[in-house]
Length: 180
Image 1 (cartoon, rainbow, N blue to C red):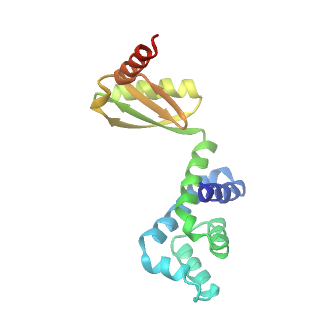
Image 2: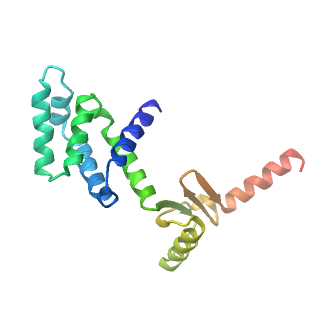
Image 3: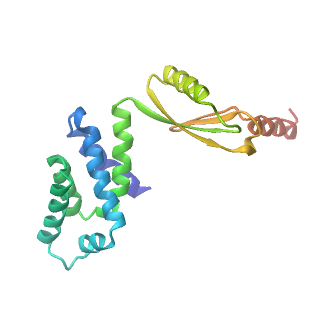
């Protein structure tokens, strides 16, 4: 939890120094580097090795940023993360930057779990209703869970709307156990 908080602090500091029109590109830069760091053991080993001089590590980061045509602010941010010994937080930082980018752009993700397959029209109606309710652009992820029996569960951030039959049955069960 502490590391997630630290990653969020780095992400917030990074985003505060960006112009709004650069959010998506900067997020792409950091995410690309984070993926490369996570998937390339040689890069992770080199950047994490205390025996390798900082100048060599900086040259590697600069080279990757140059080849990737990263924004200057993204390159500088990666250098700061390297200097502070926080490369291990990169994937969490990238995730926090993605969340902040969505927030700044007025977008949210709604995860909908339904007991039945939803048609494109049903998904679009849900998107429109959620957008009106939340006042934001809604991106929808749909999953099927037949154990819900009927209905659906909608999760947006820390908000949950559970209109599943399984939830209703559980509520009735609890009421009966408590003696109503």
